[in-house]
Image (tube, rainbow, N blue to C red):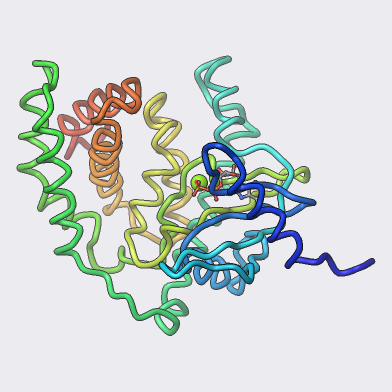
Length: 294
Ligand SMILES: Nc1ncnc2c1ncn2[C@@H]1O[C@H](COP(=O)(O)OP(=O)(O)O)[C@@H](O)[C@H]1O
Ligand SMILES: [Mg+2]
């Protein structure tokens, strides 16, 4: 079989992306998923693949832009993403189907494996993790949230989260928890292929970060529906990552952190439903912190 001509596939894809009225950042051509992204995604996707993480092979397109934007072609994975699968379950019976639960456990295993590559990652990256930067960013986000007119029942909530911010940051970014992380381990970045194997995509935000950040993203939707289901998968992750039970509370802090991000990204009316889900979850999490049975 002829080697596919990546150069011509990239050219076609880029032309198509630019042609659209609203320029797109990705498209599929002849079995390739071509994406306009950052050099970091290329580096991290390559690194993850070298380490044996199931992820499509990345290949840099010859065209790139001066601001560090690159085009990458990935093998296109036919299948559904985990979000579509999970929604079907919760629409039907408000609990995870056994097969879906297994998929989440598999996603948790892959995540523990990604995080275990931290030492190997050290050798190939010079960007250092700075806790002060996280703190600053979180404070700015809370400031912006406070500047909008929140429903009265949520007004004290943001103050309360703000008071907790140092504790939250300290708990998420503790020693041993800053690892090579995926950075956007959401359900739509986990593809289930035709053999029911999982393939992880979208490494744009990968690099140094917190293991709890990734696990909070993986479990956010389940935790909103059923914290019991989320706990089962969390325990599986912890056992795969060889973590003791006494650090489990950090997941709650990471969920608070993540809900602040959710509220902040929808503060401008982009998605009112998500904004309200964020506030509701934040309220539940802030009042539940420290409970042994959340
Ligand atoms: N190699 C791939 N094969 C099949 N589908 C993909 C592939 N890469 C991404 N996707 C799908 O396209 C969506 C958008 O791609 P992604 O890389 O996540 O971009 P974004 O940074 O915009 O989220 C993903 O959520 C996933 O469902
Ligand atoms: Mg994505």
